[in-house]
Image 1 (tube, rainbow, N blue to C red):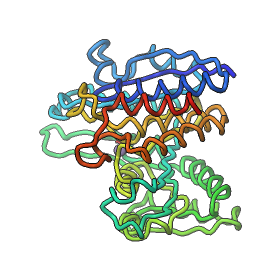
Image 2 (image 1 turned 120 degrees about the vertical axis):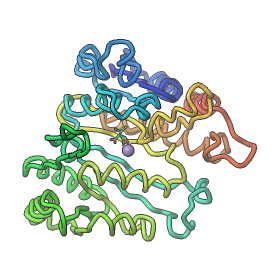
Image 3 (image 1 turned 180 degrees about the vertical axis):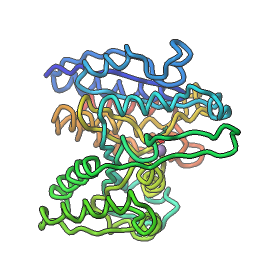
Length: 356
Ligand code: IPM
Ligand code: MN
């Protein structure tokens, strides 16, 4: 098969983790005889520096022409510390999501036997936890207008907007995943307070009638935040709006043991994007210490979701699990004094794939 992908490394540790993920992608392509071509493009702070635009038109057209996008991370302390900067790296990521129509962000959360003891949660609570968070990605407060400041600068506002159509398509997609899994869907909202959440609940209730084989549960977001750490095994598929999904999935990463382990797939209208859920971790940039596994696992999702190549994805996942069993991991999940570098982990995973 011909695989034509766009590679957007972005900022901070982005280039390092992407380089390691590409080693695994290349190893899998060699093993299964796929013809890989990839082109790189700028996004985020590095794109602002080079062009003034965090998501340049060139980058967008490359994404549109590709079969999948492998994405690193964006963000930089320079902008984090300058809240008044007009152009921001995050706008690049948001523009990409909007322009590619990526309305669903799928974040699978699983545990790894060799990492159970790394989670701050007791092993018996998390062992066997396996759920999927489906986050709406192109609506809500991230995109609602008006957004801004009053003239005197002392009042700021964001707007949360959702339409029936936006809710309908993501909830249906979530039911589709629930049907293929353990047939339970949790709709997370704040319907006791927010008008948008009440529309979410109304639309979900209407759709639920079409999926009698799936058990539907409605949960307020504050309760869901608690349940995630108290009883993570009670979840199968969770669907929620943009901001709630952003927050809950960072929380969910502690179940896995490290934020450096969670991959994601963003899907929708045009080319799908595969990216780790973590950020650009600027403190670690250039030090060869960041965990590349979330990005390598995102590449596994790319084979499965964008190309329907299940064996290839499975082999990457197996290689990642093997690296953890062998203790070849970065400092965030290693035993004291036994940390491997980013590139050593990436090399190990790629060579496992090669020699399999
Ligand atoms: C994520 C990130 C982004 C988001 C940031 C970098 C804009 O936190 O992908 O979860 O909030 O969506
Ligand atoms: Mn986030």
